Image 1: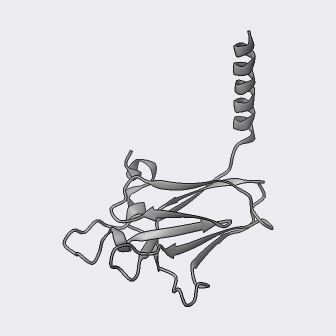
Image 2 (image 1 turned 30 degrees about the horizontal axis):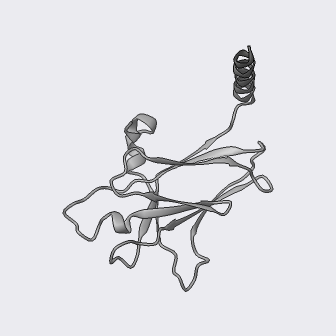
Image 3 (image 1 turned 135 degrees about the vertical axis):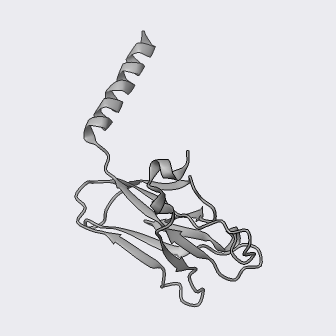
Length: 148
């Protein structure tokens, strides 16, 4: 499924970008803080895309990757030419009503010495209690039916 089906096509164009963290100063990633949260947990979905430009040999997958870090868990997304991959962090519990997302260019591959990463869309999903209840009752029905 193409990302424009999930998000408007402008989400592939509009972005904030960050460079990889300087190994001599690892305290400088981009930080996005979502505050005022009242639910016990959330799903955070992140979409990252950078234009695929084959004419620019310096602009490639090796230097267009991003690291997203939430609660100590880091996931790397390849931004270069991405049109359909969305990374998800499940069951994220806020701390003091806030969730912090660290954003940094991933460690480059190949001969590159830097990497840029892009954050185009951040989606915050609140699990619906009714859905959880329905899933739980459905699981019980399946277990019960299986016993018969």
